[in-house]
Image (tube, rainbow, N blue to C red; front, side):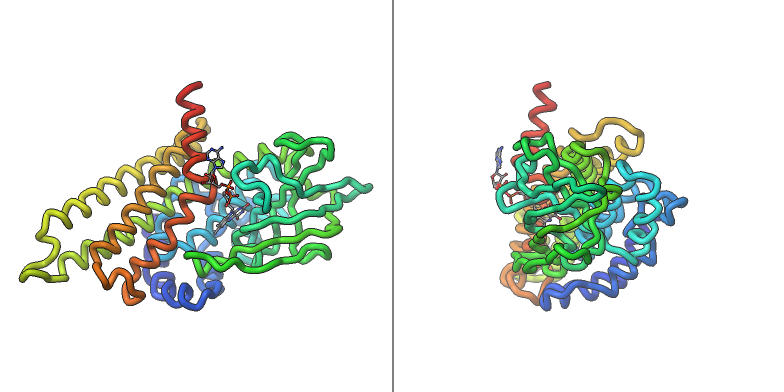
Length: 370
Ligand SMILES: Cc1cc2nc3c(=O)[nH]c(=O)nc-3n(C[C@H](O)[C@H](O)[C@H](O)COP(=O)(O)OP(=O)(O)OC[C@H]3O[C@@H](n4cnc5c(N)ncnc54)[C@H](O)[C@@H]3O)c2cc1C
């Protein structure tokens, strides 16, 4: 039911506006508002906090369906429903849940997740932003980069070093920060290869005062908050990748049947058929990988290994699928008259964010060798 409802919304309301937002580099406010009205922005939030209370299998299906219409929408959804709502659900106090979850679900508030810094990406534990305790407040100074939803967020899950003596993953804490607070400045919106409808910003903090009650989880527990959030985010990234691969595949099948060369549809050539067959298998395998990871999470089982497997496979499979989709479309595939060039640009980031492919292999190898 969730999949069908989101597919209907995504195909009739999101897909028709995706190309224009990509060309204009505009944030899709109207359809983001609609995602809020449909409860998608907090799809796993329990009913007591104003959400539909769906499981993580549903959450992943939402990510696939949105990405099959437009990757940017799936990423806007993920930054809110996964990266912001997730840590509040797992680590938030009752008061924090009541304050933020209903508004993050309805879209009255949007969230962002600020971990990456100019000097710390894959090695997130080496971050330099500091949070100094002063009475009932923390004072935060530092900088973040590449923050999805940074310019449109009302609340930011922000990671900073509370132990000034530490230089590694210990000594980091997580905070819920009001983005309108004095000392919180949004920097430039990055010009990117793709995901043009999603805003990706630098954030600057100068003497930013945050009430101590806005600590998310315990002091010094921030790295655990960050990593457990990314585990779930990897399910979302895997499912989103399958969505993009599906869009590329469906466009390729239709084009291959219609386009004629040498007096017959190009689909009658084995060279084209094999491309389609490989993508078909890749999508099916990828969907099973992300569904298994989501199912494990729903059942309270460890899912770090499964989420990394899914994220690695799905993003790399979808990258190949998008490149092949452009190839199947020939010269048309290289133009903006067809959507496959956008799929090829949009998918690349799925091999980079929420942990690069190299970092996924590192996580998987750690499990294999343990
Ligand atoms: C569009 C976009 C949206 C993003 N959204 C967010 C967001 O909302 N919040 C947020 O906090 N961050 C976000 N990010 C940041 C993203 O998560 C990082 O870019 C990513 O984690 C990689 O970090 P890095 O760019 O510093 O690359 P680096 O860590 O500098 O890596 C460079 C290369 O070295 C490789 N490498 C690094 N360490 C190792 C190792 N130990 N072994 C093998 N290879 C290694 C990497 O795999 C990569 O290929 C976003 C980035 C982009 C571009």
